[in-house]
Image (cartoon, rainbow, N blue to C red):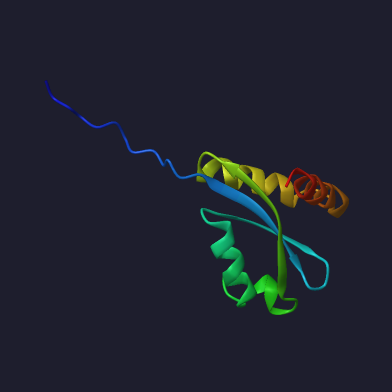
Length: 96
C-alpha cells in the first residue's frame, strides 16, 4: 500500500486582534501569536501605526482555524465604526 500524505494543513490557529494605542485608537491585525506580536508593537516594531502613539494594551483576540479566515475577519473588523470595535472589546473583557 502506498502511503501518500495529504496536503499539510496548519493545525496552528491564526488570530485577529485589537491593540489599544496610547491615544485611545484601536489597531487591528492578525498573527499566529498575538501576545508576541503585541510585545513587538510595544517595542515599536511590526507596524508604523505605533510610531506616533505607542501600543498600550492587547484588548481583543479571536481565533480562526487558518490565516485566510483570519484575514477575512480582519478586513471585516477594519470596516467597522469605532463604536462597534469598542463593543467587541467590551464583550471580550466581559468574557474573560
